[in-house]
Structures are given as structure tokens and as C-alpha cells.
Amino acid sequence: MKAQSESPLITVLPDHIANQIAAGEVIQRPASAVKELLENAVDASATSIQLIINDAGKSLVQVVDNGKGMNEADAKLCFGRHATSKISRIEDLFCIQTMGFRGEALASVAAVAQVELRTRTAESETGYYIEVENSQLVKAEPIAAPQGTSVAMKNLFFNVPARRNFLKSNAAEMRHIIDEFSRVALAFPAIAFSLHANNQQLFQLESGTLKQRIVQLMGASYESKLVTVKEETDYLNIRGFVGKPDAARKTRGEQYFFVNNRFIRSGYLHHAVMSAFQGMLAPDHFPLYVLFIDLDPQQIDINVHPTKQEIKFEDEKIVYAFVQAAVKHALAQFSITPTLDFELDASIQQLSSIQQPFTEENKTRAADSSLFRSFTQKNQAHLIQPTGFRPYPTDWTASEPTPAAPLLQHALEEEAIVVMGLHNSYIVYQTSEGFWLIDQQGAHERILYEQLQQSSTEKPIAAQRTMFPITLSLPPADAALLTELCPSLVSLGFLLEAGSSGEFIIQATPATIQSGKEKSIIESLLEEYKHYNADAGYSMREKLIRSLVKHRRIKAGTTLSQKEMRQLVMDLLACKQPGQTPDGKPTYLAFSNSYLSSLFGK
Image (tube, rainbow, N blue to C red; front, side):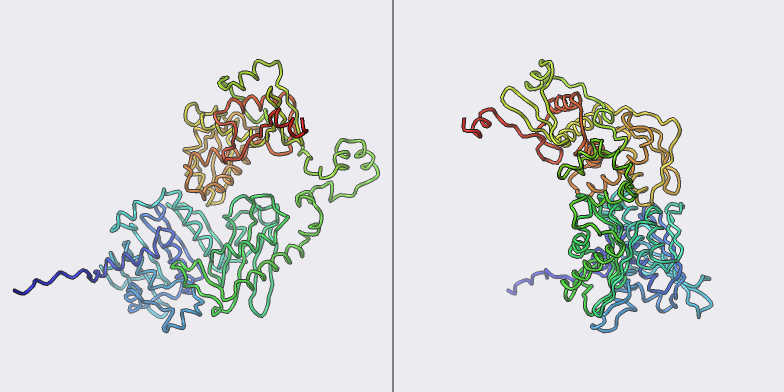
């Protein structure tokens, strides 16, 4: 009897499924389509590009350009897999100087969305309309159309609902879209760009210089804080701008590398820039930079990642050295680094007291001051207090601790807690068993953290209405982030009303916030939040609480009175976890009497 043949285990996927799988490498979210469509418009020699977004790109991503356009044959071919106008032989892959791959992008988009294309060339009297759904041609007909191309991607992942479920909130997806838009706009400042979201204009960028484009995207405050970088060699050219040290922030959102006008990510080159700024930045701060590296395309491989944002240099050590040297040279040229041999904070060099002449009258007055005495001691410059600084108890609502811990009970029974300040950063707290050396900044972080945790879950923080509404204007990326955070900020005492064009009306802030500081605390809160936002392990509420803690904590070097130190110690002892900061660092070190005796051989 003849054995029955087994069914084959290997099958050939239908085209529409293969297309959807391939599209997953390119189109991961609406911002992915934005990147591909914008780059196609750039390659079409457009001088004006419009990006139109609805529902954070989930319902519509449309790019309209005034470029070359396509004829009927090209319009039909561009949606096919492996269709491209950029390469014709394998060698072309290693000398690509264009941006998008029009056919590859459109094929990927058409596999996971409903796409409408309108296009016309300068030579043609009529345009052409193509409608594609699930990789299938639905409609094709001649139409009246302006020169250029319009691609509208509708209902992303309509045929892959599992993928759509993984998309983030509209505010989060919009931030990704703005990031991609900003990268392409920075790379091509000679092209005019606009961005409309839900019928609201977010950007209107006129063609101009790179510096003008940076200011348009990041805010007018950078107008006077940009340093020109320009180095030309036989191997490569480096051009662009870096921000002065005082423009550095805690987040990495304003660092851009472009290789042959293509945005890339490179931790290796980022390290080169950071090393050039060594000694000029506060801890955990990052400088702004927009740097373009131009070199022979054969010296790089851009095909190591589907998005082409990670590339491989033939000799990355040479590129590292050139980037580091170019940034160092730029900072030196603009007198940013004349005092690197001195052990002084770079920001001190900008104080008016150093910039202005020091007269004999000033010398006499200064010699009699405590400030002069502090400068005669070694390494005391960092102890200078800013004018008008409000110390610990003024910007913080004292808790009403329940004396649960034995140490706290003992402390409250004493007439006065025996404490002493040390270097304006530490507190020596005497106990019957020895003493604690308390880090006042870390201790305050723990106190604030537990208070905010309790307030956001049990008792909302008291909010204080502003006497007059305060308008806060933010760049679009920050505005999108704040829109997402507004509901969660209510329990922390902030009440904000979103306006138009990145404006917010500050209706109320926590009662402990000093009047006149409302704008600055929200801006600082956003910076701290972006600093934490890279850690996916924290919830939004947790990030907000930690951000507020970082902003409102006592800074190292702050002088506290005896009363303030005692209150700080009492509130620390009342905490559920007094021994650690929210980040897991110790708040105090305990020294026993027996250990002290052993140190002296007793």
C-alpha cells in the first residue's frame, strides 16, 4: 500500500501578508511614515513641504510638496515592492546621497494603511490620482492637480489591529512626529516647512540659514547662545552649532548629528562632544549641538539598520577625533574656554562682579565682608549664595509627622535636637548611641518624595489660584508633552488650561510656590520629567513626583539655621524609609560610640 504523502510544512506567504511583515521594519508608528514621506519630498527637489496630521497620525498623515512630481507610469509603479528611483546596481547602496526610497516607503505605507496619492509633473497638463488599500490598487484616474506630490496615509494599521493597540497616547505619538519633523527640517533649512495638527498650525518655518532654523524650532532664547562650528579637512568637513555651557539642560532632546544630511544616532560621537565640553557643564547636563559631518559616502555604511539612523564609519576613531577637536576649537574661538586651567565653575566667569573693573573702593568694602573671608579659604567659591535665595522651610510645607519610630519619639521628648551644620551640606545629629552624618539634600529629597506620594494618592496638594492668569508659551514639542501631563498635575497642585499655538494659562500652582516663579517651575518640571522619561520602569505619576523632588530639593551649599536643621531631622525620622533617597542613595551614615572609641584606641 502506497504511503500517504505528508502535507508540506513550508508555504509561500501571500503578497499582502509579506508586505505587512516587511512594512513592520519601516513603519512602526505614525512618526515612521512622517520620516519616510518627508524625505521623499526632499528628494523630489521640493522648496516647500507641508505636513498635515490628524489624531496624532492615527487617522491621517499627509505630506504635500511642490517638487518634481511623477507621471502616470511612475505613480503606478511607486507602490510596488522593491520599486525605487534611487538605485539601479548593488554598488549604488554604498554611495547613496539621497534620503528616502520613494517606492520602498510607499509600499510599506500602503501595506498597513489606506493611501491616496495625487501628483503632477511640470511637463504634464493633468495630474494623476492613485488610491491603494492593503497593497491593492483601488482607484487610478487623471485629475487636475498642482505640480508636485501629495501623499495621504489614512487609518494606520487598520488591517493590523494588534499593531494599532501598541500605539501610545496621542500626545506621546505627537511628540515622536515632532521629533521626526524637526530632524528633517534641521537638515534642510533652505526648504520651507509647515506642520498642522488637528487644524492647528504648530510650525511655519520659512527658508533660511541653519542658525535661523535652530531658533525657529527651539526658541528665541538660543539666538545668543549658539557657537559656530566649522572645520574643513581633506577627509571630512564638520559644520553646525553648539550651545554655550549656560544653555545646557538635563535632557538629551537637543542633540543632533547629521552625516551627509541624514540624521543619525551615535553614542560614540556624542561622547566626543561631551569630552570637548569637559569641565564646563554641571553634572548630568547636556549641551545643545546640531552638527553636520560631510564625507565621501563610500567611507560609511548606512544600511546597518532599517531606519538608517545607525551607520558604520570606515574609521570611526578619525571621525571621533575630528568632532572633538572641532568643538573644542569652536569653544576656544568664542572665548568659552579661557579659564579651563583654573578650578572654578565655568558659570562663575559670567558674573558681573568678574566682568566689571574692581576699584579701590570695592576692594575696601569687600575686605570687610564675610564674602571676602570665604574666598581667602581654599575651594570656597561654590559657597556663594544667590541673592534672594529662599531656604528650606519657605518653599516647603512642613509635615505633621506621627511619632512612630522610636528615634523620633526620643527626639520629640528632648527639649532640643542636638545638631550642627557641616560645610553647608551636611548635618551632624547627636544620638545617645553616637551620631548621624546626614546629607541635607538627600534627606530633603526623601521627605519631599514621601509627602508628594501621600498627597497624590490620599490628600491632594493645596493649590493656590493665581491672582491674574499667567500665560506660558512653549515650543511645540514641550507643549505636546505638557498637554499629556496636565491631568496628572492636578493632584500635585497645578491647574493648567491649554490654549493655542503652544500656550497654556496657569490657573493655579501649589501653595508653596513663590509668586512670580510659576513659569520657571513648570519649565524646570518639564526638563526634569524628560530626564526621567527615558526610564520605562516608572509610571507617569512617579516621574512627575521625582521631577518635582529634584526641582524643589535643598541644593548642596545652602545654609540652614538651627531651627531648620532640627525640623529637617525630625521630618526625616518620620519618613517610612528615612535611610535612602528616592534614587537609592544613603541619606545618612550612622557612627556608634563604640566605633568612635575604637578609632582612638579606647
